[in-house]
Each structure stands twice: as C-alpha cells, then as structure tokens.
Image (cartoon, rainbow, N blue to C red; front, side, top):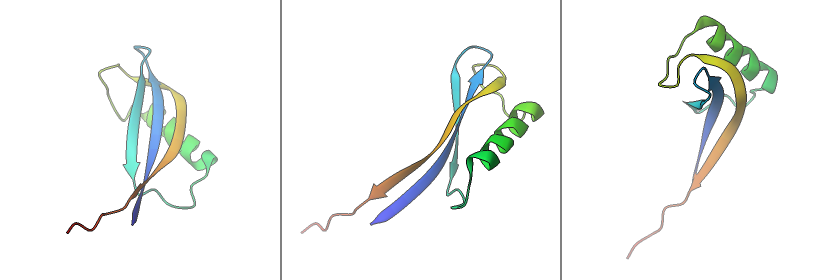
Length: 74
C-alpha cells in the first residue's frame, strides 16, 4: 500500500477563477502559517501566470492524501 501526499495551494485570480498549484510530497511539519506566508510571497512576487490572469488572493490550501493498494492478479 502506498500513500501519496500533495499540497494544493488555491489562489483567486483577476478573472474571478480559482487557480490550483500542486506540490508533491510536502514536508510533514507544514503549518498553516508557513503555507500562508509562502502563498503571500507567490502573490507578491507575481511568480506564476495563469489563463485566469494574475494571482491576487488566497482561496485556500489543503493536503490531499491518496492511498493506493495493488491487487494480486492470477
């Protein structure tokens, strides 16, 4: 069984859409404060562009875990 963790950073854009950036294998000791600081830095630095325009605000963040179990086939 394998567990895969992904950090999803969700931003609002100038077009009114939500843009999600996914970071694989985030550190286990992440806090909301650390993530918020990083997201504010991404917005302030205008680091990423999207089809929805510039990233202008934080819409949320979450860690998604996916568990995969391989089946033995005969």
